[in-house]
Image (tube, rainbow, N blue to C red; front, side):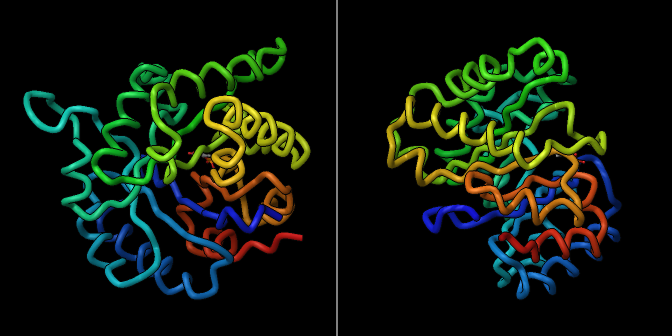
Amino acid sequence: MSSPLRRPLIAGNWKMNLTLAQSVDLARAVKEGAASASGEVAVCVPFTAITVVAEILRGSPVRLGSQDVYWEAQGAFTGEISAGMLVDAGCQMAIIGHSERRKLFGDSDEWVNKKLSAALKGGLTPIVCIGETLEERETQKTWRVLETQLAGGLKGFAPADLSKAVIAYEPVWAIGTGKTATPAQAQEAHLFVRAQLEKLYGKAFAAGTRVLYGGSVTADNVDTLMSQPDVDGALVGGASLKKDSFLRIMGFKAA
Ligand code: PEP
């Protein structure tokens, strides 16, 4: 069970899925299910669904997030969306540095750092994703990768600037593969991440920062993952697209 300093967060990442009608339907179900959630709940939806989902979630405790944010405020940046535009459309959160963005679209630690800065300045709660590939794990590079991604992504802030930031440990080999990290693997990595946060920004910061686990979280494995002392929530892809499974994940039971 996570420390009382850190309120658990269950965040759905809808990725590039759902029509507007399907988004409305799912957002309504999440809103209705929020009363029996075991912590804070968020849905990170495609840009096109933000305004309709914001309308549905109005007045509910469910937070709304985007899946990315660009670092410039406005201008000739075709295809990009700024933090100000996201807030204007109804977002309170933004995923930054998801492994799919890193792998398919070239997001580097330097970009993550710039996006993080823009998100914080714009008033968005950032969910910064880090994680190792299978090859990196198998060649004993996991800790080096996590250390590098954290140091690069979180570079140059004061602890107070990052007080809202959330970290998501998402082993790339577990994302969308059905191969979840064991609770022991997740706990070991989360403990390592927290030690790095302490090295970068001090003990109080590390103790108060939420570290989510992501990678094939389902209704069947969420309880054991959430029972680990350093797992403060989950970033959920596939299982966040189905009402029943996401509602069950929202209502996780930690030992
Ligand atoms: C994700 O998109 O961040 C993710 C963890 O996906 P999945 O739950 O489908 O593995």
